[in-house]
Length: 411
Image (cartoon, rainbow, N blue to C red; front, side, top):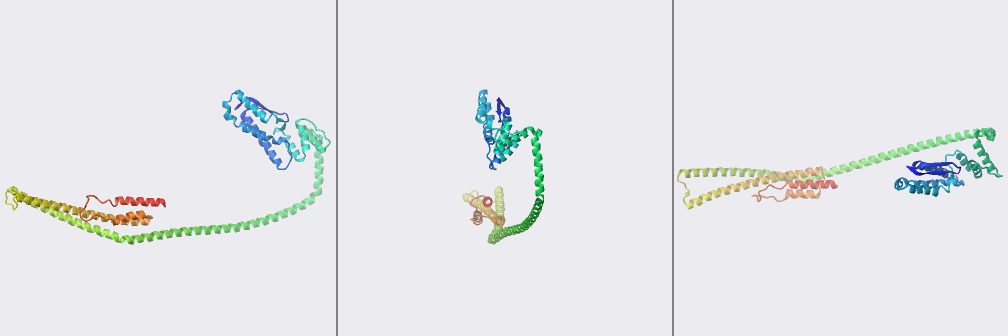
């Protein structure tokens, strides 16, 4: 996003930076903040007395927090409002802090930071030469050394003093290395031998401890696994045995009812067949008698029952009523027998259904109550009171399956 006006920053060395894009300015602020914050934290851990340049990261941090809101708010600003925001940012964080900020890209910062570790006076003298082009006068060697180092840094390869100092340093290093060579060799050999022995000892101890710990952990894991497996199988065996015992007990308990309902179904079937034969016999006899009586009446033969008399009509009507009563009674007996036969067969099948459900799933108390009520509830005997099929086991079976599913889901 383009800024409404150019924002200009100047550091302590007089280096000028101009920004016309918001993103470029944000990236610059972020780079400066990270650099100085890192240097401040690193040197503060060493307990050094740091100049104010290192705390400039706070100003960049605050400026970044302000600029972060501009992208969302800037579209609603006019030119004057945008100018005011930029001026406010500069006045709040940079106008009074320009003398306390050094651009992180200056090549002399590395040397200056190293000098801070050695001497604050040396570092101050060096920085004054680099930023203000001023040589600090003083009678102490540290200030003078800072000036010399600034001169060497500025002159680089043209500095003869720099070359002489390097030669002197090389000579001194050669003498020191000659004096300490033999001692260093002995110390290195002794240190290497001691380190090798310590490493070998620690390695062996670690190998033994790791091997022992590994074996203990493996043995514990195997023991836990075998214990868990055994307990799981034992629980499954107990559950299976309990289910089989329960199923067997239920089978023994319901064997007699199942046998009873089987025999009852056979008995009612036989009765139904006998009543059917009786109905057929009565129907054939009645049809034959009425046919012969009607033919004789049409041909004018002499009949024992005179339909021309009141007594004959009443007697004939009584015979017809008797035939109708017998047919109706036999029909109801037939339906009653077959009804009871079907009822007994369904109760027998319900008994086996209960046993199969008890073997495969857990039958709760509600399902058991429904089944027992259906098995041993009173059924119509003799002539049917209602001409309808029994409601069992359709509704009962639905109730059983519903109760069984509910118990299975709750468990």
